[in-house]
Image (cartoon, rainbow, N blue to C red; front, side, top):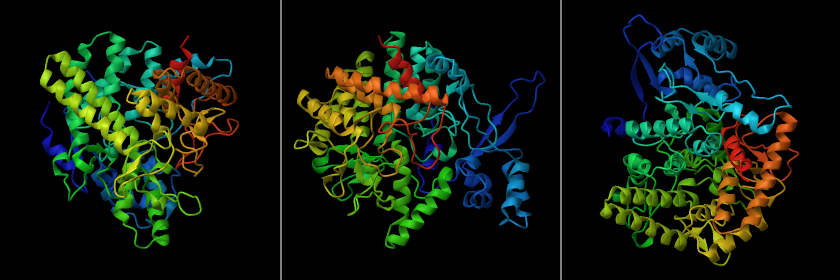
Length: 544
């Protein structure tokens, strides 16, 4: 692997403004040209005061729009030009400036004639959502060397955990070439920056997402029927593991958490979600500032830096936002100002880490390294024992996230509890309890709800999401609860089909409590496209 120490040090600073200079040559011109440098960096670093003025305004309903703009000139020239603007508070003047100096991304809904069968529509969508290898240009996009599939809508770049579920559909439709390219892109990101960011944007470089890379490698190995795939990607899996375990040597009795690592009683290590930033998200700047402002009005003693980090860490979880990261108020509500993501040891993350350890161990076994195989097998066993000790609730009969700051489980019911089933971590007795919880608490008309709480957050009731349907269905099947698994499958596919026939769209999320009503909540409208919905539907529909 290339030495990326300096780059990684920049990423690990509490406040960093990354500015990469890339050399780009024309790939289409026959005439030899001198490569020109382009600025790729965080929007704050690229645009300075312009960034803050735009993001505090209401020019764009979606804060992500500006940070995805492509500058027509160098950022330095744009900053200089902005200094001469007299009426910076005039929204009309500001908008005219943006239109002059930037290519502003547009959004076109993806629809299909109602005569086109849903599976054919999805097959056609792969080419619509496919992006060819990137040519570097100034802005926030981190160029990737191979083709990849984006989710769609406002999500114009590759996303980490989304991609695994998208790959399920690509595999069903025989597009192993795209899967291979996407995994190679993720390996490239690990190699160059030390981890897989949330997405290939510079404003995502403070965080990752749920670590599904090892599952992607396993999928590719099965598709190719070639175990050497594990050995090929072993260095990248180990490097990603190091990223998630960074700080393990710094935790002790006096300091129980560092980065993504939490030291439990007795010294066992588990993981948490932890964004390295403690400032508003660039892509949701206005929303984050307003959230914290409202929180301070209710609780003036609030630690604002921790709240920003907790917001960002919830984004790393993929569940942004959910009652999982909130505290229940006396009136039964879950106010955003109670967010405490970094206090929580999540069931799903630690199940994914267990799978990473098992997969790395298997790759070492294939390589003939018995010492490393035994070491990672022991890590996995230690994690499983710790997860059962801290997150399993024998009285309730299922898993809860654990708040290490209080020494108690959070008591929030969620589909995170099915992850140990997906990875064969639960005993038969535990599996039966989780199955009963899913059936009693979360089974709805359109599939399974993410949680039973209607908080207004998009990762709560009444919404259902494709990746969690898949994890639940497969987890139940692993323990022969096939009747419930198939019932969830049929209900989920039905709501997908009904929405498609009505609106000709594959959506990001669905209302599973009342399928007649669109999915909602969150910081932006329900998106269409949609990578992981397409992938899971296509995979389920292909089953006999």
